[in-house]
Length: 447
Ligand code: S3P
Picture 1 (tube, helix red, strand yellow):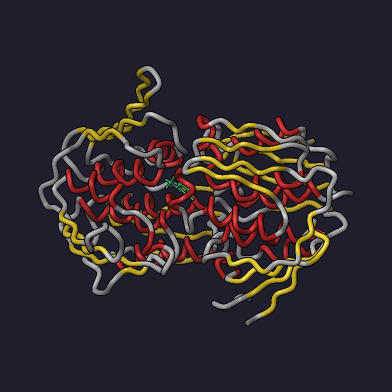
Picture 2 (picture 1 turned 180 degrees about the vertical axis):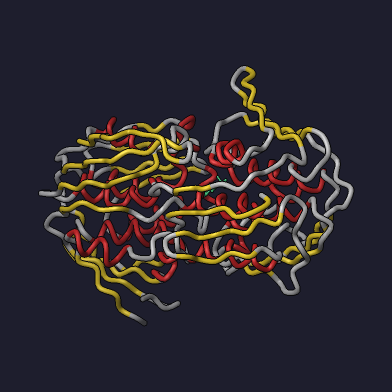
């Protein structure tokens, strides 16, 4: 539906209504494919996210010798076992996907194979030192240009040593990469996490039978794996992605006359910061039918329009629990009464774009005042004043920026045009059709 230069035009909506499912969880989908590859035998994945980022992981695993195919509603991964990868005969292109490249670097680094990884213009700008440094300690050799950016050549080690690594940045990708590398190493590899991040890897490793231990010491988690576990194949059903659900949730909160039900959304306690924040702002959200699916908490969400949401302070301790939701939270904040202060969000500068800057530029263009510091953003809500709109926004190859400003267009007086909307395919391929079916007015224009 999208092409590379795609532009979308989002115009005022008069309410969204309906019952929907959002695309499956991206983080869990990457991990299901990767852990399935490390088990011996067939892993069945139901509800795998079929988006560009996930297809990058899938193609990369195929290039490493794993057979993956679809049969009816299941994706089947014929795992090769820990250490069973073969050397790819071409450069692996990870596209726009940070999770693909960082998790792959983990599994390759402790295998005696060589590989070259690269990505699109956005991924080639993102920091990889956070991953190269710990993985080098296993004995893998990396060659990159001087500032640790892609493309990167990896020479995996045949004789890896276990490591203890104190995470320097709160990152589930870095944590997961080290744990996955540790599976092919004799002895115990430990990651010390001082700020908890999403724990899908830990939960899934447990369900595949890996030897994983999590010990709390003060405010830190010591997460360790013992190498060469017997990973048994699994059956995984992937829940809906809270990070994708965040868009219809936000729209229902801010567009008058809205009421929606989103079924089967993952509510992992390490990813529920957005819902907590909205409830503090006064949003009317009901959580029903809580249950466990593939070891993950899942529920249905019913969201009603709430007039007069109020601005809040979002504490730094919450940032890892809603790291991908700040762009859409900023749009809600623009409509709220009073200011919303988002603290401790420096990691947003290293996502698919510098998200603090992209949000700031986009909101200012639409008449919303903001102020920013290196690790903080304040959005001064317009309250009962109208948002003018009428701007052209550059999404910088960043799906969440594109979807956030498409959301702003639906409550602005004049339409908002978003350039670079093809990036939406990386996580939410049916965004435009699904949102229009609920009551948005988004038109796809090509340049
Ligand atoms: C992800 C972790 C987060 C998140 C990204 C997905 C994951 O990145 O922003 O969208 O699947 O592990 P960091 O680990 O860089 O915080």
